[in-house]
Length: 205
Ligand SMILES: Nc1ncnc2c1ncn2[C@@H]1O[C@H](COP(=O)(O)OP(=O)(O)O)[C@@H](O)[C@H]1O
Ligand SMILES: [Mg+2]
Image (tube, rainbow, N blue to C red; front, side):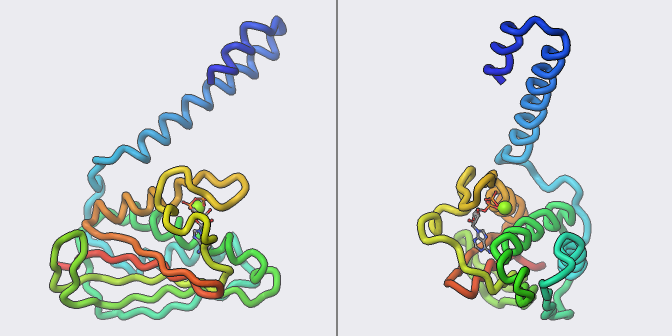
């Protein structure tokens, strides 16, 4: 933003000033967006009954629209999982960010035609996380057969601005983590070359 302001003072042409104003305006808009996304104490705003399989199906259709060929999405759903109170849109965004990363990591396999993404749901019993014990929790795994998370960033992938991709923002997993934490849950990652498993845990009523 600052550089665009300096540039604006240097140029005389009206047309060019219009361009610098676009840059300044967009920089402000993106800053607002990032502030809003990363604000740590945002509560789930649209709370309703969430069906996790509806969330998965929505993500699946968004992913298949973007990667229509070369990718198989396997669903292994435990349909006995009850609905829970939460923000459906936030959870769609969280799962989408995870699945989207997987698809980016799967680029070569998508080209080769043997990329696979698995959505698996399970009920976990008597689990402890976030220093609390829960009788029932939902476990959602998003598993891909891509190359795995690079070792150099493995222990930092949930931190903001950590990216292993050219042009990546490093915000996708931070945001996913924030949204899941707002449901008193957490995300874990287990990755080796050929199998990367992101596990979401969310307490059930
Ligand atoms: N399924 C995956 N397979 C391999 N690497 C992954 C996977 N998911 C995430 N990563 C790594 O974690 C990094 C951080 O992801 P993210 O927070 O979404 O930021 P971004 O996608 O903008 O880089 C990615 O750049 C990638 O290097
Ligand atoms: Mg991402």
